[in-house]
Length: 473
Image (tube, rainbow, N blue to C red; front, side):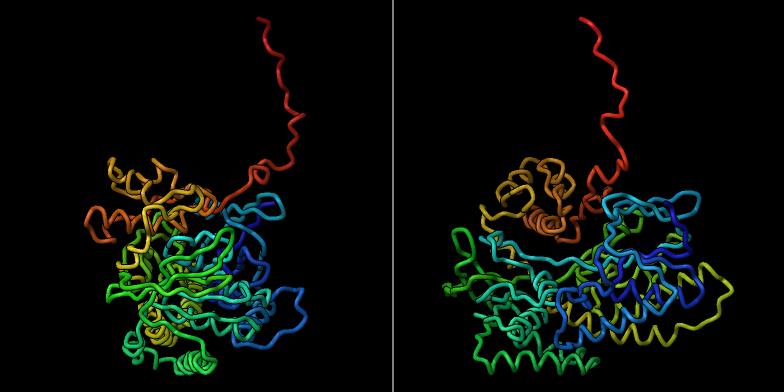
C-alpha cells in the first residue's frame, strides 16, 4: 500500500526524531522511517527488549525521554524499515523501503534526510580478524545488549569515544587491557576552551579518564596500533609511538588481548543527499565530505532538507537542535502561513556546534596513519582487496575512486563502500601527491542499502510464468 504524508523523514536519531516531533507539532502529517526497532539512533539506542532492567545511564535517560515524546506526538514511526531508493514524481518524493520481507512506498511533499554518520576505521594488518570491532559498533553492542566485546579488550582510536567505550567496558564488568590513542594530552588541552561550552559533558569526560587512571589501566598517548595478531581470532596487538603527523616510529610493544575496539572518527553519511543532486564539499573540520546545507536545514532543492550528522559531524547536542530547525523549516514549506521564530534555536545550535566540532577535530585522522597500511593489508573487506591491489590499479591509470571501483569492484559489496572508499581516496591522494579534497568520493547509485530481489518481486511464483516450449531443432 502506498501511503502519503506532508513530511517524510529518513532516520530516527537525535536529529530525525526531533525534526519529526517539531514538524508534527506544527500540524504536518509526518512519517519517520528508521532501520532500528526503536527510535534513538546510535547515541540514544534503546536496550534490547530481552533486558528487563538496566542502570539508568544519561544515554538511556535521554533516549527514553525521546521515545516518550514520539509516542505522545502525532508522528508516525515506521520501524525496521530500510530505504533503498528515492525518486521524485510530479513534485512529490517517493521513498522505496523494505519491511517484513517486502517492498513498500511512501509519497511525501517534503523529505528530511537525517541519515547520520558512519565510522571511519583505519585499516591495519589484522583488522579483519574475529574479535575486532569498531568503536561505534562496540557502543551499539553495549547499549543494546549490555555485552562487552570480549574478556580482555584493547581500546584504540581518536577522540572522546575511546574513553567512553573503555569506561563502558569497565562498567559492564569487562577488562580493559590498554587504551591506545594518537591524540596527545596537549591536543586535549587545546580543545578545553571549546569544551567549556558544555561543562556537563566536560565533567563526564574527566570522570571517565579519572576512573580509568585510578583503575591502573595504561593510557598510551601518542601511540597507535601497528598490528593485530592471531590465528583465527585476536590474541595480541603491537603498539607503536607516533610522530606529530601520526606516522609510526620506534619499537613496538606487545599487549595480549582477545578483542580490539578501534575507530578514527565519524563521517557524514551523504549517499542519499548526493543521489538526489545535493553538492558536497570537503570540510575536514566536519569530518570530510559533507552536503551543502544551511543552518536551518534548507538545501538548494525545494522540499528537501538535511539535518544532523548527515550534514557534518557537530555532535549529538547540535544534531538534536539541527533536527528541530529542519523540522520547522519543513513545516514552513508545507504551511507558508505558519508564524514562528527560530532565532533562539539557531543560537543554541551554534553554541552546541562549537563543542561538537572540537571533538571532531580530535577525532580526525592525520596523514601519517596511512603508513600503517602495509602492501598486504586488506583495504576493501567485501572484495578482499589489498593495498597492493589498489595501488596496482592506480598505476595502470585509475585516478579516481570511481575508476578503482569500476576496475576492482571496490565498494560494490554489501557495505556499499562505507569502509573502503575513504581509505582508497587517501591512497590515491598519496600516490598522486594531491590533497584528499581533490579526490572525490564515488558517485552513489541505487540501491542505497542492499535489498533482496525477493522483496522486490512481491507475491510471485516462478511456476506461474507462461513459458513456451522450445522450438524443435
